[in-house]
Image 1 (cartoon, rainbow, N blue to C red):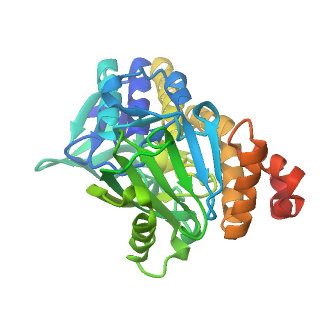
Image 2 (image 1 turned 180 degrees about the vertical axis):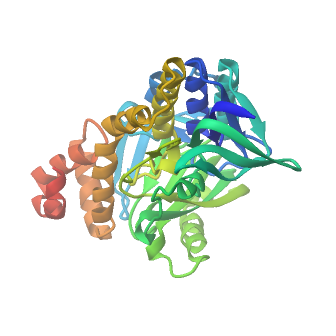
Length: 396
């Protein structure tokens, strides 16, 4: 069997790559190891609206759980800073139903001409003279070799395609965030819930944060992310989240509908995401925001760029490494600086005390900020509390 492109993984980044490659004229196969695209959900499910416009993803109420007014950032001492969803960052605006969202993106890829196989596992890459020429897969009870001009690794945080290709994607413990999320219902509403996505900072979640992303008027994704190097034992993460929930009045009668665990990369941009015959995209390419741990939007943007490059390759017949480098340069032009800056900021944020978080959030609540970005926040803080930003001066 032979295709121009085989995409390994049918998440948002994989589906956008498959869609735009197929629209550009490439023959595309997208494989997914699970039996159902989009399930189980391992995500807070928040995304900013602008990603939909940038990637030409038609808005569809069927995968929208709720639209929120903005973000609400809460300090350890209860200081609250609110910001409108238009300026609140890449995870705020729409809380989606990820299973339906992922299926819809895969449907768009299929309409563009991509072939989709579920319950199909990649076992390894085929190579000739150092160039990747295909992939070995298992589908149901049959193993087969599939030839392709390019294999796309869209296989998420645990990506094997990158390792098989020799691309360095290994992470240090401080660049991995362990996550645990409950979907809770029977939450008691207040003046802001369910209208805001909430982020709670400080020692309640060392090296990370607790989030509350509403799904409807009484249901929310309530989760925690902790830096892996801060965890002494695996069950410790659940203790942090359970203790916060036990003290939160709105959660007094809340009931759990599901629970998911996982990990996300919160590292600096990696050195390479393409090699001869292979490209990585989305979480596999470590394109997750190091501060928020959000990756849907960045994965979609990079997938669109990669798909367009592959479509161009199909039209011109140029499948060289030089052609694939257009994707490398493309995603770095729009994402690399922000990812690197946020990685540096993350490493400094984890050193802040609860008192410092109170001062920062309290100042933002008083003064306000046009957009929730590290650069703008630090400029505001510097005017009121210059001593607080000494460790961040290289980011201003």
